Amino acid sequence: MINLEDQEALFKLIADYLEKDIECTAIGGTAMMFQGYKTTTKDIDLVFKSDQDRQVFIKAIEMIGYRQESAKFLYDEKRMRKDNKPLLYSRGEERFDLFAKDVFGFKLSFENIVQRHDYLGKKELIIFTIPKEWLILLKSITNREKDYEDIETIVKIEKNINWNIIIDEAIKQKKAASWILIDLEEKMQKLKKIIFIKKEYFDRIYIAEKK
Image 1: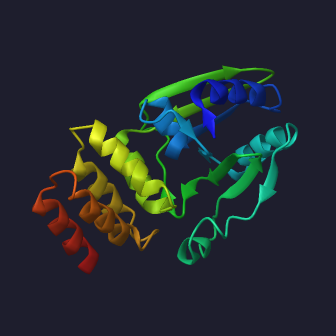
Image 2: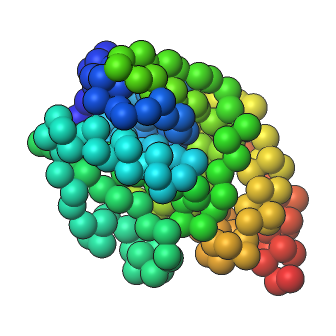
């Protein structure tokens, strides 16, 4: 596990090993730490604008001891069948899940950001974070063991989740990630045990799924 202070120091160290300036977007536990939803994470999840940028980042973390591991035991079969799978790198109990351009087919907007974090070393590492609604949707997409728990954490803290934003984006991108509406509906059904979610939101999903 890594806390926010250690994560800040790690990103600053990585910036010292980069060959060029890099921009990426934090999702998952990393973004949740930046936004104050949790204090530690094991998975440092980043999405890069290109494969080339991801490779520059990988070269830097390999120089400080991270080594590649298989993703097939972390993600289920339908996700692993996607062409653009994440690359996993670990060192001890810490792990990077590194995506390029999309998250299992889900295209990430690099303009839809709420925070920017700059780490200046030999080069500059710039990390953006996304709104809470996108965090919830992406947690539904990655669907790892602790992802639902993280969604619960967000909705317990935030009382103004805009479900229309989440559903709009899921409908928009369902062709690229065919299971997205099913997985989102499943998470929302579980969330009904702890928060109120209007029936109209589920109806929108059911109508879109039939099209």
